[in-house]
Image 1 (spheres, one colour):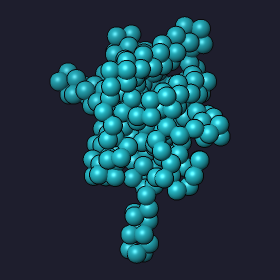
Image 2: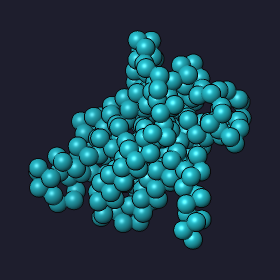
Image 3: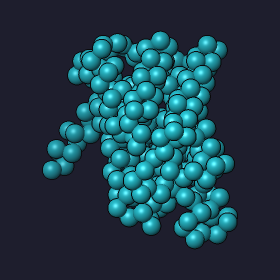
Image 4: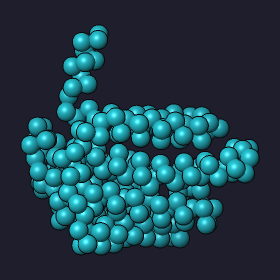
Length: 224
């Protein structure tokens, strides 16, 4: 059993896939225990962030390129574009199905503890999730669907199959499937044009941080 685990852990895709799968499993668990969703979120943020830090040397090639001014501009523009696309449909097609979202004020914590919870939620959404998801979707899967020996595929390589497939799967991961697919298309295009994963991480981070600020301002917890 130990040998099997050791052989599995040396697979090149594990650092890209395992943090993502762990995050999804804890997210799904929180849906079954909504009264503990705040504890699940804290746990998955810490555990996923710790795994990314532990495997950081595996991502050196992915994150080696510096962002140019045009890269910053493109990332910021894409991030705000996805944010607008994500929020605007709420006015016309509100979410439904009895969902309540993540309301940090509903767990009975003190004011200071609630502010800490909000801080963890914003950090998880704006830092941990963009790094974890972009490593999985844009660095691993986008290349893996071109060649299973994905590390030999340059960052930002294009094929119609990988481009469309990852966009659709990215949308299916989120509650709003259509806007999720559009977001996946924008992030994929951004990577293909920039050839720099940091641009996508920046864009994704801006989208998630902006969404978090909007949620706190509007108390529209469904987006969380």
